[in-house]
Each structure stands twice: as structure tokens, then as C-alpha cells.
Image 1 (cartoon, rainbow, N blue to C red):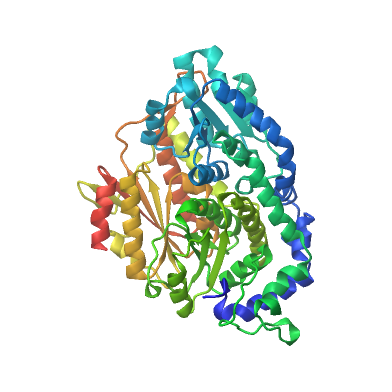
Image 2 (image 1 turned 180 degrees about the vertical axis):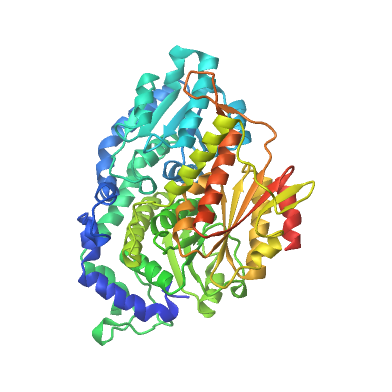
Length: 586
């Protein structure tokens, strides 16, 4: 397969849209931070475009970041635990998994789950005297992050005393946020104030990604250089970007035709240059044509990059009845298990060609294909900027504002109401199951998962939302369940651990065209952990288990209010084992 971009029968539509994009000077206007690219009002756009300058501006912050990292190393810290959600945690998690930890730097872990077993596992396994806690939140009011901070501050306070406790914390936040205020009151080691004009999911090339990267020994200057190089290419004259696909280059073996169209030169050498303009246009046009499931195959070395991409695409495009649904982590299958609602995207590193034969088969079956590659890990900087720009372009083609998240707040409001009920009454609102056994309850309109899935039609997708501890056993059970659903029903599947997914795909779940079937998975908590009402105080009016349950109930109600189809499977014991049994039955 010579071409790295095969649009199939959608070539003409993409060509026409690229021509319009060029005529409207869309990419130039994006770089000029022109909010009218997306909407006539600047609200939640003009103050969200700082990511365009971040690869250049963050060079001035490297010395500050490195100085703090060096003092942490000199003081004998061995571990770092990042407390964050969504854009504050997914970038650092990608860096940790891709780059590892350089000798002499800090072993970084990420906490983005309110599951009490997960919180307790960190509290019990970490040497608090050698651990740095990174409190990472743009708004400073993210309930999960603030709860983590209060809990672990109290743990450190009890173990080391008030004079030392604050030295074990740094904050990454916006100026004037609530966390910035607490960091000063509690005498944190350092507070990194980020550019407030950068939204969370576009923040990986700012302090939110670079500080954790520096803690593990990454060369953050090299990462930024890669992003700047990609940025300069994207800023080049529009003709260079569009001609690579729309008209072609004869020296690459492509034949230009009158009017700027391009002959289908499948048997000739050469590859299309996939710019952000082309990538974003293709995603937008394919989504409007019903190919709204962007299915990613990534090299194992950079597989975690898919989790970052998932949030970027889903939360940016999934609104106003539109959306590009990213499918990451789904096991590859033969062409016959996929519906006609997919576009397949391969992101590889080095000489990895493990997916070439599969992509060739999918192309032969008529599916659109895109292939991108990087030579080495630090080229992720360029990929990050490429995908951020492509997402901005896709949002323009879909007619949405890629920088807001209007439906996220609905779930938060309902979760707060559930949590308030718990504080007032000591319990959450009770629900009546549609079906019960000794091992589990089923809530919703269906009495079995098989009956629930029978509602599905072509073009739908199934989202598994697991409000349980993210263990290897649960990972395997979810993987097997989603494979079974895909192979039997030819439906795209996604998996998200709650409440993590609320800050990732949660916006799309309520904001897209309503094609999702949502399977919420909950379980009894064998033990719980109290959340202090304030740092340094012992009084607690809610636990992590209750907060997690309130978030699950709030999101489920938000989905129902949006007309979505939802079922909840509640396991009293052994949720991974219970899922295995259910998988066989469907």
C-alpha cells in the first residue's frame, strides 16, 4: 500500500472542502487567533487559543521548571504522584509511558480515579517522606483533584508534621484559582502559574505537561522544538499544504488534472503530506458522511498517545449533535466485523509496520485509511501540535466550538446534587432494579445486557463506563466484552473508567447525535476512605466511595435527560468475574 491517505469514495468531497478551506484562509485565520473561524461570538474561544503560542512561549519557562526539579532531586524525593483529571493527567500519563523514567529522576504515577481502593493503594504503597505530590488543575475547582489534595495533605501532615508537609506539594494551575490560594496558605514548595488562555485538553505543551515531563527526566526543550518545527510547517503558505493532496506533486508520482483534482494513482509511488488542514478536513467531512468513528491503531511504544487523542477529539467535537468518536484500545479484527461508520488511522513509530496488512484489507473493503508516523519519541511534540490544529479544523468543518464543553457541566451539577443528598441524609438516593440476583442488580429499562444491546442499529456505538478499580483483571474483562460486542453486533466500542472518562469522552456522550448505548458498571466497595472537608482538618462529610457513586448517578441521569440509552450493571462481589459470565451470555 503506497498511499498513506486513502479517502475512498469521499475523495471528491474532501477535495471540494479543502478548496473552500483555502479560499476562506481558515488555517491562516486560526494562527491569527480569529474566533470567527468557528463562531460569531468570541466567548470561550478568544480566551482558549494560547496553545497556538505555547511551543514558543514555554521556552522561557524551562529554566524555572528545571530549577524546581533539581531542588526536588537534591532533597531526596524518589516518587511523584500527580493528582489531576482529564487534560491535567492524560498528557503526563502519555509521557510517563512513552519515555519511562531517566535514572536519578522521579518515578511518576497518576491518580485520576475516585475509587477508594485506588486511592488507598497509593496511600499505603508510597513512602510519603520521599514523595512529591503534583496538584494539577486549571480551574482549581475540579472536585476530584481537590479531594485528592485534601486527602494526601492530611496523610503527609500526620506523618511528617506541619512544617514539612507543604514542601511535599507543588501546584500547576491558572492565576487566581482556588488551588493557587491553597498552595500559598499551605506553603507549597512551588506553584506553576500557567497561561490562562489555554484550555485543559490543549495544555500538554504547557506547564501541565512539561513539569511532570521534567520530573521524569524528559528533555522538554527537545519536545518543544519538535512542536515548533511542526508549527512552522503548518504556518507555511496554504498552497503547499493543500496541493499535496488536491493537486499532487509530479515528482511524487502523482498526476495533476485540470481544476486541481487528482487522479487516483494507487499503483504509483509517493505519499500524501498529511497536514493538519487535510487531517481535520477529512475527519470533519467523513463524520458528516456517517464515518464518525475514528479508529486508531498505534504502535505499542506510543499506544498511550491514543488516550490523549481520545479526549482531544471527543471533548472538542462532540457537541451540537455532531462529533468524531475516537476508538482507542479496541482489538484489531478482520474487515467483516466493522460497520460502514469507521475511518481507520494508524500512528506508528520508527519502522513499525505491523498494521500494514490489516490496513490493506480494510482499504480493499472500502474503508478510508490514514497513516501517520514519527521517527522517534520526541517527535510526539510535532504530533501533538498537528492533532491540536487538525481538531480545530475539524471543529470548523462540523460547525462547533472546539474549545468549550457545554454538556460536561450538566453531569457535574447532577453529581453535586447527589453528593449534597449524601451529606444531608447520610445516603444516596435509592434506585429500584429491573432485575436482581444474589450476585448483581440491573438498573434501567432492560432486564439483561442482551436485551439492551438488541436496541442497537447500524451506526450506533457502545460505551462501557466502569466505576470500579482499574485492575488488570478488569481491563481484561472489559477488553473481552467489547470484542464480543463488536464481533457479534458490528458496533464500535469504547471503554472508560469513571470518573476519568467524564473529563474525556463525557462531553461527546451527551453532545453527539445520540448514537450511543451506555453500559455503566458499578460495584460495592470493600473499603472506603474519607475525604477531609478542608486540608488539615479531620472532619469528613463524604467519602471517596460516596463521591464515586454520586458521580456515576449524576452522569447516568445526565445521559437519560439527553435521551440516551443507559443500563447499569451493579456487582456485589467480583465485578471482573461477573463481567466474564455476562460476556458469554450475549
